[in-house]
Image (tube, rainbow, N blue to C red):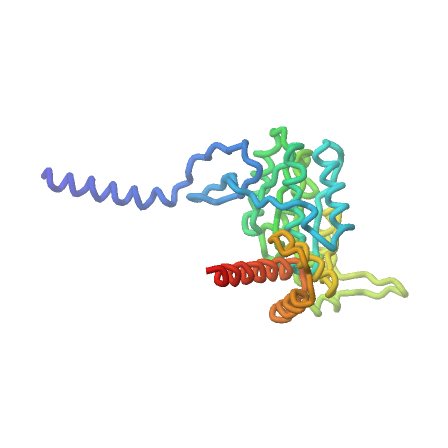
Length: 293
């Protein structure tokens, strides 16, 4: 009899251990001393997880986008000062500094109370819960959505629209959304949608599908476009990053190496220039080490 009871107890404990992984956990206390957080799903429940070492980059490291940078800095300065400010949509060519610009704002404005919460696209349905956690805080929060794009069936699409424009509940004054995307309207556009367009005299009336897609991007008060770099702009960024790694001279040899590197990547962008600088500086350091030994 005792052996049967012990067996049942062991089986019950084994089942409880397996079930515990699927049960919602108790909301963890948020580390409000952090500068940045990620929204994480743990054991079926979302929480703000502090980022112990956020990416710190200076604004001056972002080159060839001075007009866009000035607008983002101005809008953010208004925001941290408690003045009206807009949510921002940064769109355009890949590798041109859209995400880096948002991250650099933390280095510039953290002392003024700016904080960043990164939210992945699949977690946007939790935005109302996230905003409710931030609403009573004295800090100013950017909800950062990187590389954002939607399909028509994505549930986060409508949730983001509500947070940007508000529902029956007002939006929070200490929260704005900064999003980056390679798509200006955040959703794919299809040839068939052109068939919905109506022509009334000389007036063009887009179809309902197109209007619905535009309606999300229009909820961002500030649109900024980023364009692919030309050769000189690419070399300027490469020279900046090389100087950061201790290579001050951009001679003909280095210039040729930078251009060859961009050809192998099939693009000229700030990201490719940064990757070239790391590659070239690393090669030079290794060659110097071998020659010295």
